[in-house]
Image 1: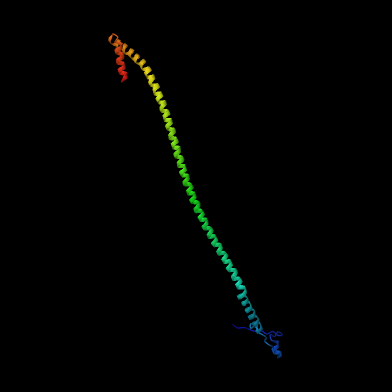
Image 2: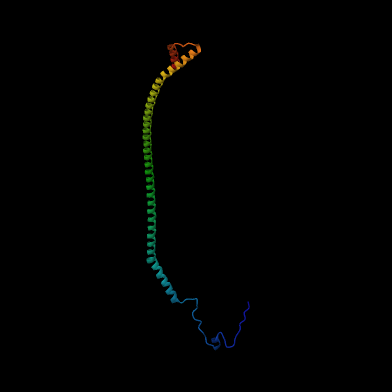
Length: 185
């Protein structure tokens, strides 16, 4: 790359060079002075010693305390979680026990109700049997009362039929005996 330098009249970049005065280049902008190095090194050493013996131990103690607090909180939470699980297991065991006890009581009540029901059914059956027997006795008595009337009516009808068929009236005793034998069967 080519560069061209333009010199303008009246503007000289190094006026001292023309006048013959020698200019001191001064300190370098990058190179520090020795007293700056001493102050920087001293302050660094003081800060490092301060950190090492005073600030870092306090920081470490605070971090250890925080870590111990967190660890104790975790252990306490684990202990409470285990206690809660134990309580849940106890509750479930008690619940199962109560359910079993309730089932036993329900079964006992069911059996008692079944026994009472059977007893009432037996009593009702006995009452029904008594009523049936009484009704049967009434029916038998009515049959016996009506039987004599039916037998005499049948005997009259049979005697009249025999009289119409043969032209003479059969003996009433014989007709009553035959009608009684037929009705007895």
